Every structure is written in structure tokens, then in C-alpha cells.
Length: 222
Length: 222
DNA sequence: AACAATGTAATAACGTTGTTATAGAGTAGC
DNA sequence: GCTACTCTATAACAACGTTATTACATTGTT
Image (cartoon, rainbow over all chains, first blue to last red; front, side):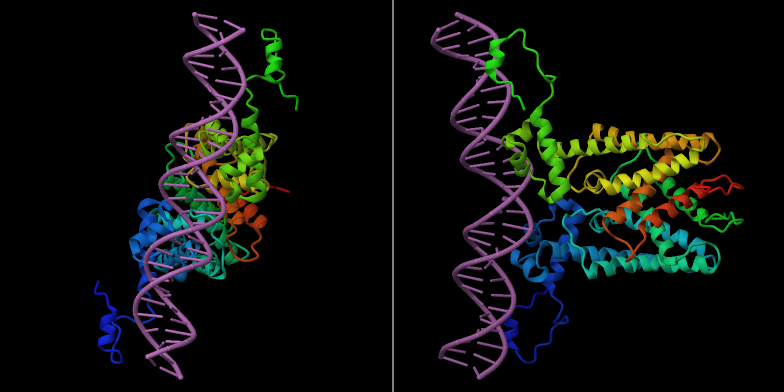
């Protein structure tokens, strides 16, 4: 890291051009990076203000001036986690079979949860207590739900599923996905539980349950 | 409270008969009662060792000699919560229609979660961090699952549902119930979400999805 | 009946947490 | 050149879980 020292600034005060945009706060990024690493590698218990600043440089006030406190850092991670989830869901290609697309979204959801357990814990399990919801955190969560609702809408439009409302269908699916991975991650369930089977079979059954009467096509017709 | 003073014991050392069973530790019960109250009325943040002993009498050592620390108290609440859930599920009468019984179990589950949010938080959401799972906590959780599995087994035996395994079916149902109430309690979901509708419709759809092909009977045939 | 031993309870202390107050250094404007 | 201001670092504070220490009551023994 080629730090720009104050003496460099003094040397060319007017002609100085930042190598990075001026409004990018490197300390802010370093704090988030340290928080990410601590959370992922050592768990929620290791995510303390002192540890964060020990790894990101500076003093404790760094966290307070930039994020307003520890909660602000956690909120940033919360939003980031939902952005990642939304981005991952967006990678699901749209094929000619919207039901298969929706099923693939379900699998992506579980993959996200398993590969980002610490993010998932912050997002859903209150891994860091006393996280207060703001408009921004709500918006981030709704973004991910919107991704699911779009896929749900396509299944309704195609007549593959029956539901009063695409957003409600998305909520039903989301809650089901969340319930299974939540128990899997805790972990909590019968010993030697086959979680992949539980997840795919429950998802398939739920989709079957929303299938129009007479259609018995499962989500993976192979 | 008629305390038995040491002088009473000295007065009739051999003939003394305790008015309560000797192994009932009143301090232990007082600690649990205080913890229950603090958790229910002031939330997980108020559940501190010092608050507990301030309300239950004695000193901090009381908690350590009887529960080994704060975690021990939380574990006791965890087990108690599952015992309550199991007891509530057990009240579900067995009728001639096992599918209706199962559906009623689903409704009881949500009722428990809504009426015992603080217990539910301890049991599933890690409301108190760093709760380590022990054999006893596992057994308590499996007791509640067993209640559901018994109801699930009856639907399979009656041919109302199709599943490889009653315990797996119970796990599927449990995870789905949990997912919905978990999002409802947080709260996290679309604004103005009709949670009772989401819960009953998702449950109904899931049960439909496990119905044998050709049977389109929903869980509430009225 | 007096005394050592034992186990329990209360007090105080320790290390860590999130947060805040205080003091210091460097920068911009006049 | 001086003032005002922002940002940073150090230190302090209250509260937390936990542990060490001290006092005390009870018991078994002589």
C-alpha cells in the first residue's frame, strides 16, 4: 500500500491529484475489511471495536467518527450481505421454464447461506445483538426479496404456479428457504439429518403445493 | 415464606421433616424466575448476572455455584422453552383425520412462538450469544420434534401424506414453521405482510405438496 | 463442651466490553 | 500570523462475565 503522506501533499499542494477518488475513505474500507475478516474467521464474539481498530489501524474513535459505533459497522455488513445475496440471485439465468429458474434460485439461496454463514448470521440470526433496523437495512432486504418476487412473477405469468400475489409467493418461498438453512446452520435438527435432501424436497413439495390442480409437474422434470 | 432456621433443625435433629423436598433449591428457582422475568419484560440485553442476583437475592456467586455461569441459566431456559413447546403440542387432540391434527400442530407452533417470543429467541435465534449445545439441550429439542414426528407418522400411516420418513417429514414441517415465524418475529419481510395468511397458506401448500398424487384434499376441508 | 475442618455465601477485584470525554496536532481562511 | 476547525489518539468511565479472597456457619472429632 503506497500511503500518501502529508509531506507529499505539501510538496504539490495545488497540483496534487489523488490516485483514488477523494471521497473514498480508506479507513472506512479498512474497518469494513477487518470486520469482515474477524467475523468470518473468528466469529461474532471476536468482532469488537478494539479488535477492529487493532487490525485496521487508527484508534477506537475511527469507528465512531465513521460509523457512529459498532452497530454502524454491523449495519454496513448487513447491507453488504444482502447486496451479495441479491447479486448472486441475479446471476440466475432466465430460461424458458420459469419454474426451473425459481428452483435454481432456491439452490442459490442455500449456497449463499452456507458459503457466507457469518454474513447470514448477521443478516438473519442477530449474530450481533441489538441491531436496529433502519430504512437502509429494510431496503437492502427488500432488494433480495424483489429478486425472488421477479422469478415468482414469471412462474405465475406462465401459469406454472398459482398465487394471489408474486410478492407473497416470494415471501412464502423465502421463509421456507430461511427456515431450513437456519436450522442447518445452527445446527438444530435430528442427528445425521440430510440437509440437502431436506432442502430440495421441501422446496419441491412447496412448489408442487402451489401448482395448478391437474399439473403434477415437479420443479425438476428430469 | 416460612423459612426453616438453623435453630429449628437443632431442636429436632432426627425427627425433622422438610416441608418441601430437600433437593429443591429455592435459590435456583428464584434465579430462573428472575431470568424469565428479565428476558420477557426487558429483553435479552437486560439478562445480566448482576440483574439476576439483584432480583433473586444473594450474590453473583449464586449463579456460578448453581448454574456454572450465565450460560447455564440460559441453557436452563432453553430446555424449559422446549419443554413448554412439547407440552403445548401434546395438547393437540388426535381426531380421526391426522392431516387436520397436523395442521393444528402447525397453528400451535406459531401460537407458541408469538406468545413466548423471548423463549423462542433463546431457543432459535441465539438471543443470548455463545449458547453451547449440550446433550441435554439436544434432547429437549428432539422432544419437541418427536411430538411433530408422531403426528406426521399418523398422516403417513393413514395414507394422507407421502414421505420416506416421518422424522424427515417432521423436520421439513418444523423448518418451514420456523422460517415463517422467524421472519415474522424479527421482523423482516415485505411491509404490511399478512403473516397469518403467509403461515397458513405456506403450511397448506407444503402439505398439499406431500399429498399422494390424485388426492387434492387440503388440510382444512371445510 | 471446645476446636479443627469443611463447604458455602458475600465482597471485592480483574480483565474486557462499548462508549465518551479530553487533550493534541495539523489544516484552512482571513 | 493568527484564529477556528476538523480529525486523531489517549485515557477514562460504566457495565459486563468471571474469579479470587475473605468471612461465616455448620459439622465431625476429641
